[in-house]
Length: 355
Image (cartoon, rainbow, N blue to C red; front, side, top):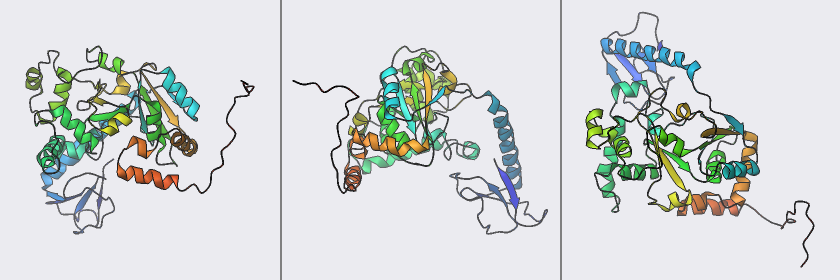
């Protein structure tokens, strides 16, 4: 929520200038007579605006805040259960064997790509930096050739999105894994004091909403549209260019990428690519059947044990992130054990078989 505070008595503010501080709501103001618009984590420079612009900003933000409040009661609730043991996770993976999985270290209750989440997507950014996603993509494509040689062709937006996602830039891609244990690792790897969550999605059901039966190949019109959308000013014209006869896509699309990096192989990576967010077009709103989308909460008290068991099964930084930095991290953890005595093997109350 956006609030406004004045550092002096009412009426003592400067009507000609408004100072917007995008980083801290408690920042000491350099001009005590200025109003400050408190918005956390907004990636905008410190800027002065005219009084007319200030008034327009407040009106716009207030209308959007009221709109969000009226939507709260209409949000879709996904079927939710709990995972407390490795056995639970294995049951999920073997039962939902064709589903894709995604883990969060804290409960988010949403499936939104990073570029469409704060601080990259909020009221202020949409009003003043509507081209932010396009700017991020073009900056990476312009500067990457100085640092690497094996790069995609400039006019291959799908490959560029995969490369950007691999190197940590915010994109409209959302990471999934075909392995429930990989997703579980990401749900328990951090924030041990907070509940985590694991999602299971049936990708073929999602793609049926776009009229596509199966998973798309690289030249699929919907995939090409979604990858090129950030640089387009005319959505209808773009749909014609990529030969998408069904018009402008509104729903996310599930796809298997070209496995260009060892990390993608190890993590069994798959993705969904998303259009700009619209009401009633998100994955939880589209997939209301628990067979197609289900969420599992991992209680904070079980995270530490689950991570220890995952490491014992071979799911740790060295295998999921095959580079020297994560190799070093795994070696440090391994050598924290001072002594080890082999325990008795499990036998499940069975009699020992004699030869």
